[in-house]
Length: 335
Image (cartoon, rainbow, N blue to C red; front, side, top):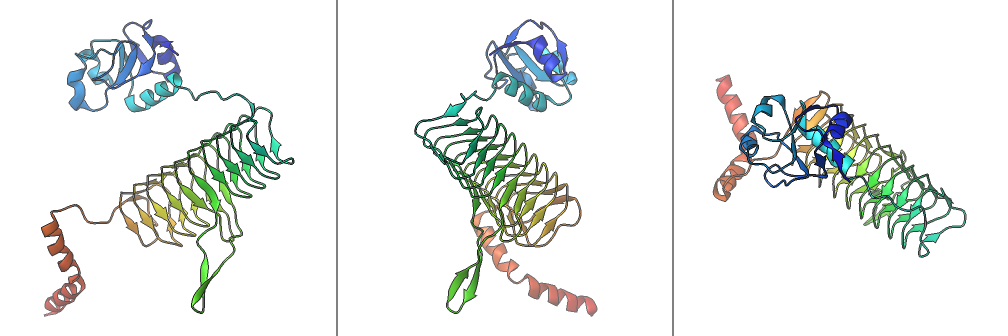
């Protein structure tokens, strides 16, 4: 698929400089681009590549326009325009409507005639697959589950009984939506399992990364809002709620009944304990351990920066004495 640069300028509402008739076939890095590619410049330290680039066009800010030796699209946000053009040039593969002969479909499942069901998929009783949905190879959609319009499940995704996935979602391979939450109560020397009676409700335009798990609620549903983006290998426990357009990076774990607001950014390997409330517009940097509710918008961090092993061991030993040192300082201050 290719477009004239003038067409891309119109589609992305950018200012065109130079030959609008040049054909653009793909996106590429500024230093490795070749004719037919469009690249973008975001960081000024790479400005030297502008004179030597072989790209047919470059996306950049107006301050770099005079340094560019090829046609350009000028914008205040080159990265956003690059993403839009990458989507235009690389649309999702169109999957043919229909049901594979090797799929197993319950007689009372409701499957729209425009949906695509791949090899080895299993659709159980009273599940609903809406218009344009794509169910990849080996997926399991359990009883009474709902998959929304144009939602795409990659291979080997499991959607548990009664769970709802909204419209225009992408769920990557190995994700599990609606496994039991981790609920047990001590009964003598053993543990009694607590039935997990809630469900999972996923909003529209949500992306869920590979091997991410979203547990069903214990009593109240686990809820993921519209526009949420979840990276790979995230654990979301029972009865968690995540507000609209929040983004969470890989390997983060969120314990049960925590409520996260809208428009939050949560880094990788963050741990959030149970029953907390986090307001809208909070940023939590990577490897932070959140042990209390966050009631004001802003950026929050914890953990210790990397150091040499020798220094880290010394400081770790001193950290264990921090409370004692604080008490001694308080006594000295009183004197």
